Length: 309
Image (cartoon, rainbow, N blue to C red; front, side, top):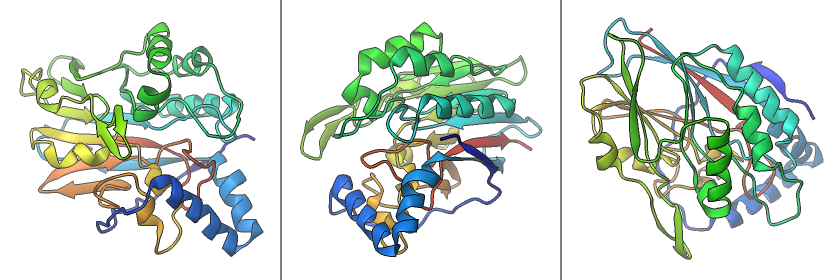
């Protein structure tokens, strides 16, 4: 099924914080059941139509610390989850074509490049999806971090595939890009739940202090993180943080969707532009699906962010 391209004009604000008491797997399964209650048409939409849409969500902002008069455009790709029933190769190709058509100064990718389900699905080999991402082009480069699915299921394969198409990974590393007089730091941290230690117990591969210690000039900093839970620890020195992982809740059933968000902060960082103490975070709804191949109320999206406009 091909992706329908729709430009999304509105932004969705973050919802009040909630508390997660059940596992995301059981909650998403319950959400799928709730969709079924609304009728077969709604269930079919969630499984076969919305996951195959594609929207471009624009943001324009001038966060504190961003130099006056300096404009930078950024395309953000998150949670591709290539493979599975709702992210075949044709969809990956359309995503890359759409991202390139935005002609941003910079492209960043926030991890979770592969899909894994408990049921049997057709998988896209790592070199194949990576070759499509290798077509991405931006004057200031294409930069990537890893997500928890990459760490849990295919760490060596994902790393090798991105290296083969010359997409650099920022694993607790910061790089300075741009022309003289308009430099910007792009910093990426390791995944915050990289190591599974037991039920609901994880250890991260992230090193935020060590990453930001590599920033040696006064140029603004953009931080890439897979999970948004790092945000309370991000200092004001960072102009803007990007995150994914949540899929915006993936199935936004009225009243109960916040419980589906995989975050210890509930829905506080579920989706969209969040401002706390004059610090800025943008959480992408992502592109693929996890656990169940369905989306409802949060279609796949590419972010197009303009800073300093």
